[in-house]
Image 1 (cartoon, one colour):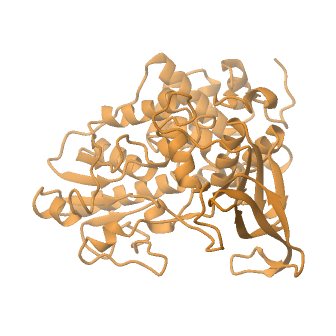
Image 2 (cartoon, rainbow, N blue to C red):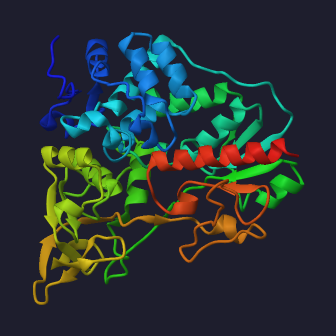
Length: 463
């Protein structure tokens, strides 16, 4: 197979008309020959900028070199030194703004498809039954991890490899956090990918206790004082949904994206025989423009709805990944941009009948650098719909901060940490991921978990 080395090897996907009616994975991944060919595009830079763009610091040139040599186990070993969730990252990490965004190949052509190659390595080793353990001898010290999402799993995996006895406490009945309840099956298969990655963390010796709501079932103070954990890492995420506060928002058929996606993903609500059935609108409006909005809209589409995304800025300012926006457009999602809801319309029984919208235009940049949307007076109109999903971001649940002595939070109710060590305002307690930053990406949460694990190791090694 010959290829123009300036262009990346394309990856196969389900046809849009087919995938829009099923929950199977959209991207089919590289074949072995395609992966080796794409790996050959890597220039193996002496000063690899791609590594600097990776929040968890994977030695990207080294693992790609092993792919080119067809030694996928060695490639997996290289990745395992930095990441416990390669099959996840290869699918949902925004590589275009991180590692691939720094790739030298991208200056005069397409950057190397680093994410697709990471996914290939992880999938190939899973299929071959290979797992890289590389754990140190047990050191007799115990660490509790609150939350089994990407930050918690990463911190737990890194600490277990360093010899710590690690226990994860998960509030829900199934581990995985946002990987299990937030990201749809068609982007991140649960049994084939998420469950296997979690099993690999267990293979390192990590114990996972589900149905434990830290702050209610047990407090962090009790974990330290009664159960004698030497340190605690808080990776409890940001599961508290935000709403707009507009009239009609408490009506029937208005859902947060969190609830809608949790029903779909964790409870398999999209299946006809599910115990937690999903509401199926005929015309659904999703409010928001981030990756959660795309996930909710594409899920609603697969349940048979004509689906609209209402976002107050333009296509250029959409915060979702370009790949997700492209897939949504291919599948038939309707984008109503530069528009913002002002009211949810209902009938006499409280059922949603539509949504009132006002048109917007872009004004001066806001504090984030994006141009601020400004309402156009008198431009209101209505969109008929029978269901509205609010995908406006999330905040950390205040339960842990409220039930733990001496934890400092900021005005957004996020935990305050030392950015070099991950330690909170209280010695021995660390935090990372969305509990600190608010809703962000999987890979940034993983990077925070790694940082905190290193901080815990340094502190406990000095004791």
